[in-house]
Every structure is written in structure tokens, then in C-alpha cells.
Length: 356
Ligand code: PMP
Image 1 (cartoon, rainbow, N blue to C red):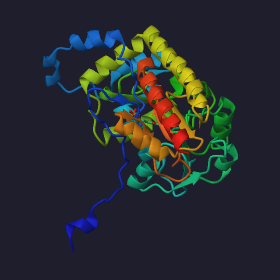
Image 2 (cartoon, protein in one colour):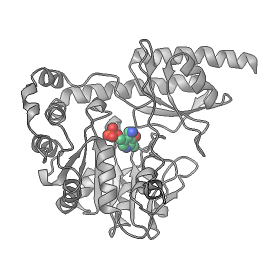
Image 3 (cartoon, rainbow, N blue to C red):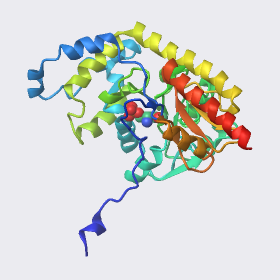
């Protein structure tokens, strides 16, 4: 008998690479290309390092209160975690505890099956239709819970609120998690549905639209009862998950709504311009409502483009997986970054046209 027989073996999630080259264009992990709000900089400069001596507030009180005010819910309806990955993992552990499979799309955030495996949760995927949309009728089969991102990742495609409600309403006896990591780039949030449905949990993050991926802040909003169950699991795991600077700086990011609206609008404007340019170069893609575009080229394989871009220090995301192996996920960066990408692609497509 070896100690290895009792190891909890898992196949981990593969995060996008984090290269650090001087002149690179990093469009591979959906980060915000703009800095966090000015108030975050001021608060960071004002942090008193002596405070780090103390444990942080385990209830993340200030951040919870600011979020509750911003989203017009009670603080008791808000749960904060170390990135939405932490919140989602905690929610999987708390709510997906039955014998029936949890349902999620076949093409979606690739952490869902990893958490299911880690926590021993049975799961089943439902195929997106040929236009990458969720088929709500697939979510009418017996199940132990439902989770999907809206907009979906990596497609960027938004489902309308009617479709989301149809799924939530058809599953009143389980928890439905809507992962809204990308909702601030033109999506429609399911938050208003909370008034009607106590089985809905809406998860969001500070990593994309609030430019704070490095701080690791995520949160979810649901019924008070649901949040109490989540807190119980969290406090049975680790009371002090969120550090003090993250709590202080996170609250500042929410307070500066004007900056938030300005930067997200800027990213949306760049995205719409880049869509037009990519089309001219022979790319097609689902119509993204997120801060990335999931694009395929008419005749050049995605993997070849991915490698060529990488050689030029332009990083995008590529997965060699069923259905999506001929697609690139391109994060929307600054106008200048996108210009460099488009310049490269123009030359590359032109060169490959001549070869063909
Ligand atoms: N949900 C989706 C759909 C994502 O793409 C990501 C980013 N990888 C996350 C959740 C997690 O983001 P974070 O942990 O940085 O909040």
C-alpha cells in the first residue's frame, strides 16, 4: 500500500499563460487593458502597512455593503470571495450536493467540469446549437443544478433575459447559477429575476470590467437563505479568505461608477470596431457581448495563426478541444494593442492568400 493510493487526484484547470515580455501584446486572459479606478490608486497609496498585523474582517463588511448599495439588494444577499473562481467553487460545493447530474453547456468555461470532478459532483453537458446558443429545453431534464455563463465564454454570446428566466423557472427545485463574469460589456444581468426566484444565484467579478484581476475579488448575489448556506461552507473552510487590501481597494473600485462606465464603454467601442476589421480580413465569429471575440478564419487554421501571433509576441487564447479547435479567443485591448494585432493579421492573411 502506498500513500499515493489515497491521493485526491485531479486534472487541474489550465489557466492562460502569463508571459512578461517588454513589448508584448497580451490578449489571452480577458484582463482589462486600462488601470483600476483612480480612487483605487489613492486608497492603495494610503494603505497603512501596520494594519496588516490584524486579521481582515471575515465578513468583508465594507465591500459587501458597497456592493449591496450599488446593486440595490440587502447586504445579507451578497457573498464576496477571492475572485469569482473562489465564489463558484464554493457555490458548487454548497449547492450541488445531490445524486443527479449538474447541467452546463458543452462549450463553456472550462473550470466547471474541474470543480465538478474535484467536489465529486456528477455532471452532464448540453450541446450549444449550431449558432452557439443555449437550447433552454435541454435544461428541462432531471438534474442536480444548472450553471452557465451569460455572456457565455469563450463564445461571447449573450442569451436574452427570457431564455435565462425560462431555465431558472423550469428548475425551481435546484440552484441555477448564472456566471456573469462578462456582463458589464453589453450584457443584460439576471439580477432583477432575484425578486421572483429564490433558486437563482448571480456571480460576478472585479477581474474584467473593474480592472482588478490581480486583486482577486468576486461576488455573488442571491436570496438571503442561499447566502447563509454559502457562508456556512466558507466559514467551515477558511474564515479569512479575502485580505485587507482587497477589501479596501475593491470598495473604492465600486464607488467610482463614472470611471467604470467610461472604461467599459471604451472597450465596447473598440470591440465593435475590431469586429468590422476582422470581418474584412476573412474572419467570422459569434456576435460577442463580452470583452473578447471568438474568431475563426475562412481558410487559415486557427492553430497556425495562434502560433504565428505568439512568435510576434502577440498572445491570444487557443484550445485544441472538440468544436472549438479552429477558433481563437481574442481579448479586447487598447486601441493601440488592437492596431498591432490587426496590422499583423493583415500582413499574415495577405501572405497566406498569395501562398494559396
Ligand atoms: N467565469 C468565467 C466565465 C470566466 O471566464 C472567468 C475568468 N477566467 C471566471 C469566471 C473567473 O474569474 P475570476 O476568478 O478572476 O473572478
